[in-house]
Length: 139
Image 1 (tube, rainbow, N blue to C red):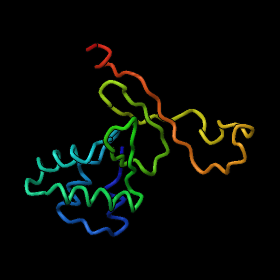
Image 2: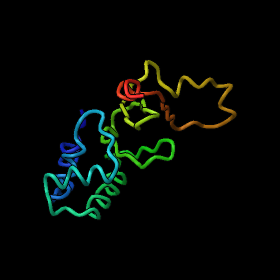
Image 3: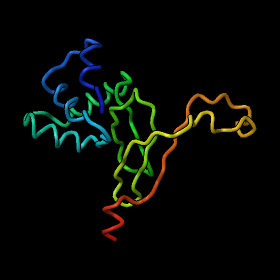
């Protein structure tokens, strides 16, 4: 479960009504909404919130390192509030649904020294692709 709202409060980040609603929308486990999905959910809670406020706030949260931007297969950017919890992603190649997964071993250690070609590796991004249960049933 994301603790985004608590992390933002601890940082002393000014929580306007718009920012608070956006943080609340992003709170939860396996949350990977697009900016438009964040806006649609935020409007349900705060009808006057603008699309620009959502985009600007998401940009600030990414810059702060409190939310990660995730892009897969040329699809729209998604925003992941679990920026401080090391994990990878499982993505449905049909509908684009995304879930957080945790590997049994550190992906940085999984790359053998002989396969690094002299690179000083700083991070690893592992994404698994498949079809979710709904897509398997539906087609």
